[in-house]
Image (cartoon, rainbow over all chains, first blue to last red):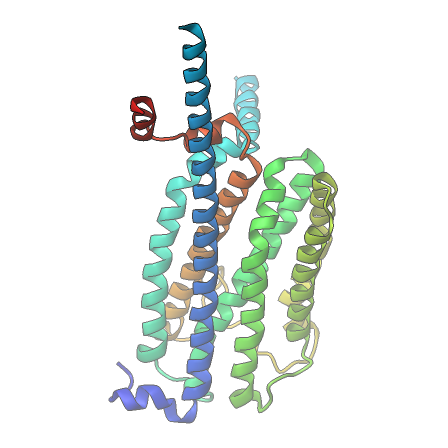
Length: 71
Length: 263
């Protein structure tokens, strides 16, 4: 490591606040993009799954009614 | 022979236009880009922050370069990608082109903003000012407005075909700004330092300074690959929600089917 102590790494000879602000913002921007995409994908996937579940139930019900009518 | 080659090339082109095929093949790419991005960004950040030597003139503030340069490079590449997608969308009416533009916008906007912000934070200790009306800064600001303009345009137009064409056209026309950003440091007398790093030439910096930058640039590109492909796949699931292949992909599990049968 270039710095001899953690304190020096944080201070960066007085430039610490600028450097850490830039890196912190970068991490934030990347994380927001990652999380927003993941949450929206989960939401869409569960909506699609729910839709198929409902369709399957309706199909089942329709089958039951025709069976009852037949007997 | 050449006829069959042309035919297979044409077939590939048609496949590329198929959202279903795209959704299937990109499944593993997303994962691969994600893993590579995570590794390279962590290694690059630690290397750039703690192990690279400080600049002899700028001291430790130069470490901002390791996030500023990749953010700016990837933001420009993404814009160029939207321009290419816009061209393909206008000429061949490929559905995926508009999906690509829609999926690129959020990351493009945020990375351009990040490039401007990190540049400002770097400018304060280096140039003695948060903001300079310098050629490269202003042309990057223009790129941010182009990104935001296309985003607003897509939000404002309800008719899908018109929305796709409008966004494609502005994306394509806006690419003239990319060479302006690139050559701004040569055309105008500026505070901005000339490119410290390109993918084609040997850098002027010592290796212990540019190697972490290379890792960060590649990490940012992998992150962009991961994020844009993920958003494209999401957009495909939204647009193709009523198709048979999406229905089959999310069909109810046999377990729940057997439960309904028993009742």
